[in-house]
Image 1 (cartoon, rainbow, N blue to C red):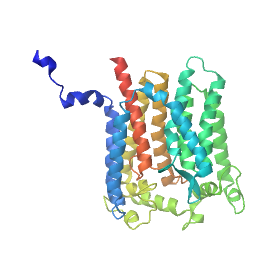
Image 2 (cartoon, rainbow, N blue to C red):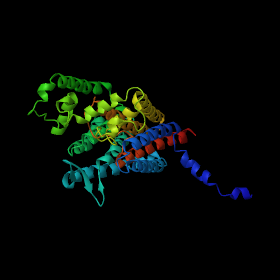
Image 3 (tube, rainbow, N blue to C red):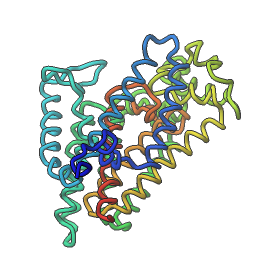
Image 4 (tube, one colour):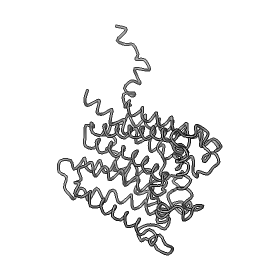
Length: 384
């Protein structure tokens, strides 16, 4: 009889919480976190306390991931409308009362200084997943139009700040929800073709479009300059093209096996700008070479494939759409960052997940991981 009243051990109490962790997903993140700490130690060696701060940010992100992993998807669904509404309201407040730094108005003081656009990276796909869940089984073209409006409102407000990098991330996450909800390929292919044609025209007529005095009405001046610099960084090698040129030099100098840990000359002689944040991939490439890059790409690919597997096995439409969107956040982060450092995409402020220094982005990634873990847990509970 005494055994009936025995108090459960500490491990037995935490066992249900630990079930929220998807093993393969956690393993992929662990590999990326190890790579991030390694290169942060090297690139941030003479950069104050960046290494320690990076480790602290990772621990905070892990804590957020652990807490969110315990939240049922149904509870997340109930947060969609209030989180999206508050996020959009804060974006409007930023335009009216925001704090301007370096020509961009992206922050607001509400007792503490925050960047509301970070909220929309999660709130927008959450809201879209809620919308399509409510319309499940009776989707009409009008429902996709409403979804597009829900997406374009925060994207337009973020671009107004201006913040091209964050607007691209929010756009990618939102479009993935709309696509996974069942958007026809007939509606996807035309804008893709128009975009490709526009890209070809820009490349062909680069000299005319990028000449002094020519303005593209769609983009801000700095965004136009970034595209023109991408097409020919040698026009201003010590100015606007410096980032791209030095990034490509560092990547190329790494060769197949790299120069070795702490041996990156471009990194430690401070030729690489933003070597602990946006351009840390260049520092990593210099020290670990092609082999290290293949390891990094394989780790990201494994994370993305595992996230998509969780989405495919999710028990509800809301969970499937949300898991797919969270996975696409990781893909977009990695693809855009590696692309801009390698010189195939314009330079935008997008960090490399778990590798780049940055507290806000790390916490956002921890939240996205926690959502994936929660959806994975709900799948196992339904199966059992």
